[in-house]
Amino acid sequence: MECIETDFLVIGSGVAGLRAAIELSDAGNVLVVTKDVMKESSTEYAQGGVAAALSDEDEVGIHYSDTIKAGDGLCREEAVRVLVEEGPDRIMELIQWGAEFDKKGTKLDFTLEAAHSRRRVLHAHGDSTGREIERVLINKITNMGNISRFPFAMGVDLIVDDRGCVGAVVIRDNQPVMILSRATLLATGGAGQIFQRTTNPAVTTGDGMAMAFRVGAFLENMEFVQFHPTALFYPGAPQFLLSEAMRGEGGILKNIKGESFMKNYHPDGELAPRDVVSRAIISEMVKTKASHVYLDLTHLDSDFIKQRFPRIYSTCLSFGIDITSEMIPVSPAAHYFMGGVKTDIQGRTNIPGLYAAGEVASTGVHGANRLASNSLLEGLVYGKRAGEAARERASTPLSRPSHNLEIKFSVLDKAERYRERIRRIMWERAGIIRCNESLETARRTLAEIKGLLKGNYQDRSALEVKNMLHCSLVIVESALQRRCSIGAHYRSDYPGKDGCFYNSVAKAEKEVEIVIERKEVKR
Ligand code: FAD
Ligand code: SIN
Image 1: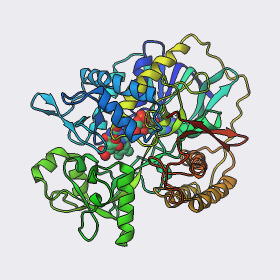
Image 2: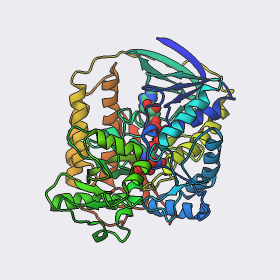
Image 3: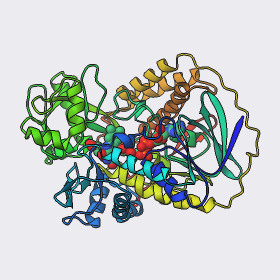
Image 4: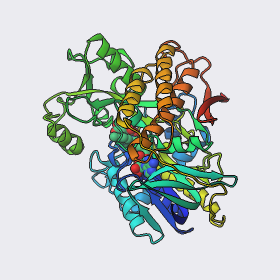
């Protein structure tokens, strides 16, 4: 097998991976491995913006309390403090590196999103905030001598021996390559693709979470999946996100009879927490026997809409919907993973030499639900921190794994059929509203697929299906055991919060048998 040596291996090239790579670049050679082209990531598609207490009317302490409130009692307070205190510096640094956030006159312009008590969300080119951040970070690493890129290479498995993580096996052109490193940093993003409806791009199949889990890393709070209320629902169109900022600027949700309904569900109406809005939409869809509701902006000035949401406007127009004069058909879709690979506030996992940052990680910042626009910020703050921590391995000897790495790949027929089965069962049975019966059905179906999916596979599709399965198994197990409703986890058979104040920690035993432990949260 081909073998490459590097000081630091970063897997993933979204905001967290790139920010970590920058931090590592003067401590040794950095190799950034990524599944597709460099920019393909959730970061690239992020619309609404990035939150930071930078406006005159805002304070770090208020951003802190909004984040804690959104997390519904399960945030790690120390992690939130780090996020909100270091966030403004990370944004200012990004601006110094060339990021152009939208301005009103000479001052930065801040928008409002759900559950923020201040206008604190910076945005770029109207609704292309993530694209601007990705552009600046890629530009930055291009000018740094020590950072190499390895695109179209998929991380398959981490290499772990008694010294900890010593690298990873990746696959490129269907050939395995062993990469040996002093420290390995996972920045592979979330797992939205395990649900039939998702706002996430195709690369987000939970690879990092599954890879880490298989070698003994802990997965925390995997049952907490945020469903975004408004993804496009239109025949032949992708499940394109309609940013929450559209509701922040005055957009109204209406059922198919044209009735506005959000005030019947929550005093904050359109800007209620995302889980409340998503469930309200499902309830209206059931009541009206419809597959969607509408997002209505037609009462807003049409020039304002075009200038504030240019990418959304043109994308919808390409499918024949003029959002300045027509209501937009929408329904919820899986959007963000609050849980992930458990880390400390420096991105260290329980495995020496293995670090994680961004959506793949669970620092405890988001608790049971994420405050909108906190994740790009998390990628910047915790990407930097994980990079800083990984530097501690700069003088760790680089060596081959102590055990024999035998990799025999086989072909998986019907990979796409399994993928669609997982996506459907997770959406229908482990989605926005769950109960014991639905989760048991999901568990049985996943167990059946697991029985059919034994072995190592050699192409991206089959490898992704295996990772999607492992993440789904942990989500269903964690959701079954959490017999209560909190944040984004809603059980129709246990609608109250009693007994819910714990963080779930999943560990793999013998061939990915899942054991869930509870860590009670002090209140
Ligand atoms: P990502 O940006 O997803 O990057 C993951 C990287 O890992 C990619 O490069 C991918 O190719 C690579 N990768 C994955 N698996 C492998 C593998 N096996 N081997 C090699 N490489 C791999 N958040 C906000 O704060 N504000 C917003 O406005 C906002 N809007 C959003 C809109 C959309 C449509 C979506 C999908 C998300 C949005 N989010 C937003 C969430 C936010 O974009 C993500 O949580 C954040 O960008 C995650 O960054 P990341 O670096 O952790 O992962
Ligand atoms: C959005 O623009 O609605 C997405 C914001 C986020 O997920 O933080």
